[in-house]
Length: 179
Image (cartoon, rainbow, N blue to C red; front, top):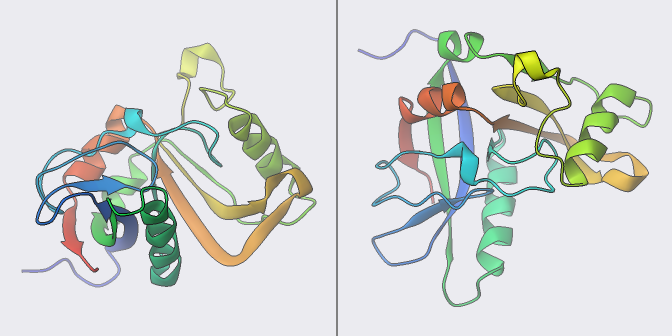
């Protein structure tokens, strides 16, 4: 029996296949698995200098996932084929995560751009008080196009997962390869 409409969230993660029948690597982490639906997602393997810092990045927009997947595959010519993996995540599971959400990415969204600049410069935290831990579990917001000029991509979004709690949610999600 499926989840009733409105109780799940669909997110698409761009990936690449490094070997035929084999190895999937997500957009921003060095996570490897035996197939598109097996193996743990490890947020700690995400690279720095990204919009919201090291983590596992997803989007709700299929066209954006296709673009990201092609860009990742292009970083290793001859070794990688683009792949996009759909994740079905319970909204109740997402609600349990300590989250930060940005709705606007316009020039005047100072809080959004402050975090983008902080993370894009290589920070290894979200600038939180030490007692709260270095990262939010989940950060949701627009995608920066030209972060030094405070320009975001119109109608594009991203969800980044950063902690062990976020990994647990991702790893219990249903995964399906789209391309």
